Length: 395
Image: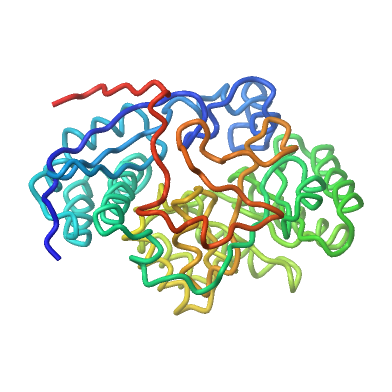
């Protein structure tokens, strides 16, 4: 099948929620005294926005074919990522056949390797790659999950991430992951508060509901080991997530050995590419890897990461990234469930994860999304043209 060539690549910044889900207004649970590596400085302890977690904003990438069909995607990266997309990456797409996803990814990655490999550059590459898959699906009139080989189940089941696992249980989710509010910077008193919060939530959700803890890279090995052990013994915590710096593979290896048998160690949200996840897997650092498809290299790279995980007998449950992860998870046996981020300010209702940027974004009903909700071409969503799009580097 001959495809029209790519005519143009465009990159925009959008502010206010959406893919940069930390870019929220006041009073949101996601910015309420959550433990972080910056909590060692008291002035940055109450709010993650205080140290700049939301400075970048959302990156929107559009890829237009010669016949006018346009694919798009959203991720984080903002204006700096726009510069990378427009000034560096676009040359590997414009005038090309959009089906050359492997060649395009390879050229984007290795041409930026000297200043990239992780972080902002990989976010930009991920955004371009996701937009390319969206374009391919629209050109073929097929959903992305069909391009990936087809679904292996009829529905997705979800756990919920947010401040209220007790409400998530009532909404039909299979589990709830709560944020850690008190880390090493608050000493023994903070540890006691953290354990008490977990215990209260366990009492609310009952003994059988999955209860997990997101530590957002805030801990050291000793603190993480103590917290995990006590939370397991006192409250039956299912897993401890992203406890350490994403570069501390040795720490994760030792943490996995140290936690009680039966408890899971999960990480990978802030890692990238097959090489980062190869370290996690070969060093046996965790039980579940959690790449974010908008930050790890896009769908093209996530395929390789998933295959690595499966070959090591590990589950891969991507970090919540709306339709961009849904279309992948539903095609993989080693991704048996998915994450849903509760983006209502009080985590008390289900709202579209990347609102207001996406139109037609499916949300779980009773903790599930049917395959039929993912059967529109591409990723099945459209860009909300009512949000303010700013293109800082037009060509």
